[in-house]
Length: 239
Image (cartoon, rainbow, N blue to C red; front, side, top):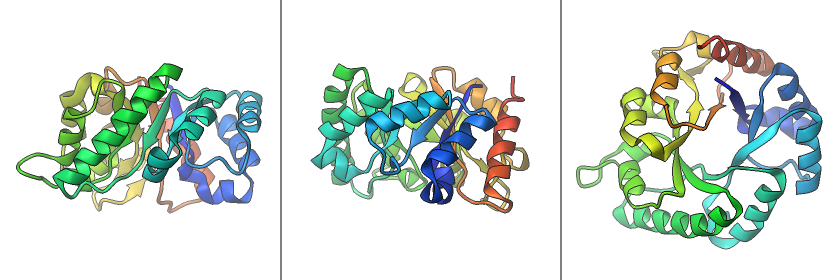
């Protein structure tokens, strides 16, 4: 399992020193990163920073406002840094109208992005599993987006919503090109990979179409870098 890191995991560290934080990510052994902001660096500076630390860009988490208002510039940045994906990390999906609007925005963006060999996607939380007319909003979204709009399934939030992440990954098959690896304990807290109840080996086995596994860690009960390193080592023990 080649593992990348969602940089939001270390956002308190990147606020202090973006460059040194990426250097530490590379030293731990992560192969790629998923951006959640660019630390005030230009695309050219980011490209050099990645190269210097033997890292690549899986993609970027990009808010809905950018998708709607300035997607061409976001696309240019991600093309320059070598991203494969531009992901919407959150949207309101409380009504069918909101879901349809999200699908429309993602489809339009995907038609532009694929010309640069970049795909667009959506990252779930738990609220996409509150049924509307007998269906999960995430299912409705997946059914109404084209093949260049992928799902980045976050296994923590799927489990948090009471859904089996293994079966849900299987359900959407080829649509699932990215997996967010985030561990949960019996109290629904985010913990180190080795300390939780989600079977990451089964997650890997179910994710037969996934192109990348992206580690994310948001809650810490020990020093941040200790957990980030522990997660990397645990995931690399999975065969």
